[in-house]
Amino acid sequence: MENKKLYENCILCPRNCNTNRNDGNIGACMVSGKLKLARAALHYWEEPCISGEAGSGAVFFSGCSLHCVFCQNEEISRGQSGKEVEKERLAEIFLELQEKGANNINLVTPGQYVPHIIWAVEQARDQGLKLPIVYNTSSYEKVETIRRLQGIVDIYLPDFKYMSSDIAMKYSKAKDYPEVAKAAIAEMVRQQPNPVFDEVTGLMKRGVIVRQLLLPNLLEDAKAIVKYLYDAYGDNIYLSLMSQFTPLSNVENYPELNRKVSEKEYEEYVNYAIELGVENGFIQEEDVADESFIPHFDCEGV
Image: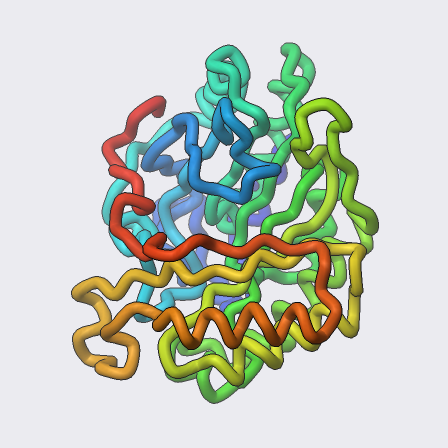
């Protein structure tokens, strides 16, 4: 049973805005308690063990509680784009993506709708959904919220954006981000402590992949994140070392971010991870920092 009371005086995320989102009020996540989706379609640009050849069934949710100044999906993270739907429609979308041949159901920036998502996944499973559920998040999540997803989520795909609280404050107004992310990821690993792959397809069935998007001029912070994750979890998780940062118009007031990551920066980043002993990881090829990786949020499939 969906627990809509969680949207009243909402404290689902660390912002603790206490907004009654059930009444149509907009919370710190920039959306109300009404489900709002921007796209539901096959997506081919995730890690190889997520997308495979058939694609990941990506459902992009409107809204986000983190508000990074460099957000690549700003159009939807600010709640500006998307279509409101009922929770029954979300369950139908999961099944439609399965019919289209998706490898999994990939919930993108979903934290503001956890009660709806739990209901829809359970409903879809009752109606024949067999695909793994991927939870694709910024990691600015409460442990209590992640704990509700035990038995619902098969694969966690969290970011770890900042190790420095000062940097987190500057770019996301979330000084507590490092500690929040550490606790959230620890709960994810508790639920999915070991990666499991399909022996035939190589697709991930269960596990945790932590993404770290290298930002310009923040190489040392990125290294600190990689070291922390490897020291804490070793080969029990996968690391995805990303170079795809694309400067958009939203970073005009942050000139230090107004460029792509250099080949030299990324090479040093990857070499550092290798020297640490990281073996379970993904790296990106050159020239992936391209706006083509940002999908059109035109409500396809919604």
